[in-house]
Amino acid sequence: MSTHPFSPPQAYREEVALLRQEGIESWEAVADLTSPEIRNLARHSPGSEARLIRLRGQASLVVGVDLAPAEAALLLHAGVADPRALAMAEADDLQRQVGRLQRRLTGTAMAPISLATVRAWILRARAAASRPGN
Image (cartoon, rainbow, N blue to C red; front, side, top):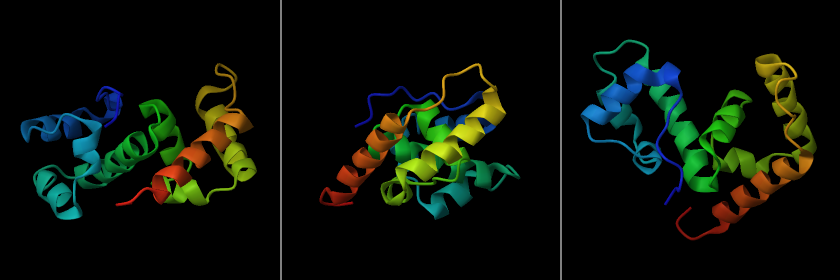
C-alpha cells in the first residue's frame, strides 16, 4: 500500500473529479484501473482517456515502486511508463534522460536527480518485479 497521499497534478482536475465521482481516491485504486474502466470513465469527457492512462502510469510507479508522485510524474514524462520499464532501464541513460527533461521544465531551479537516486529507483523496480504476483 502506498504511503503517499493521493495528490495528482493540478492539470488533471477534470480527471480527478471523474475518479472521485466513482469513489476512486487512492493511488492504488488508480493503478488497478483496467483499460475498459478508463474508457468508461472518460466516455463523456473528450481527451480524458489519454490523461487517465497517464495518471494510471504514474500511479503504477507510485504504488509498484514506492516513488513519490512527483518522481513518478518525472519518470512518466521522461518516457518510463511503468515499473517494468523502470526495471529494465540503464541507470546512466535514464539519469541523462531525466536530467534533460528536468532542466527543460525547471531550468536550474532544482538540483539534478543523482545517479544514486536513479539506481535506487531501478533496484526498487527490479525488486518489485521479482515479487510473486507481479
